[in-house]
Image (cartoon, rainbow, N blue to C red; front, side, top):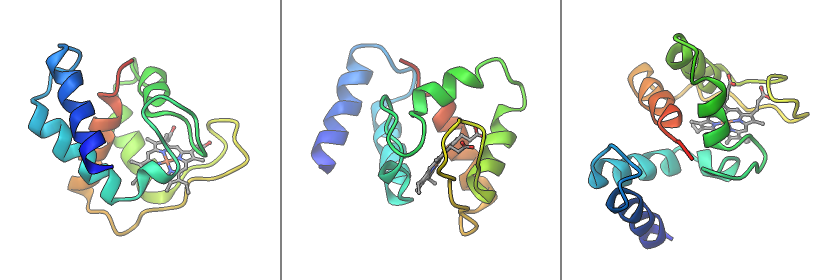
Length: 110
Ligand code: HEC
């Protein structure tokens, strides 16, 4: 599993689809996984929550996207995505890490 995610990040970086260094992308992916986000989200497919790419597209033109998404991750979110399921709050994540997560989500482009 770890190897798959790592090699995926390297492939993305190698194909020039990512502006971020491969190590950073892989480390960030590990970080997101460590916070349990991938149990409900994937980069491309709707699972329980919307895909990270559709979140990124929806907020692409929103200049307050980083603080908005950081707050959603921290306090949970419901009703924004037409799902009957809510995202639970993640109160244990520091503000610095919330900002990192929000930026990472916004960097997920198809
Ligand atoms: C238990 C399932 C679950 C987990 C775990 C989860 N999410 Fe979500 N997430 C959702 C659902 C469902 C939504 C849609 C909520 C809505 O409709 O407002 C969502 C929405 C979002 C949004 C969009 C919020 C908005 O304001 O539009 C972001 C960003 C997000 N999640 C990031 C994360 C990150 C980062 C993590 C890990 C720290 C995470 N999620 C963990 C289920 C989850």
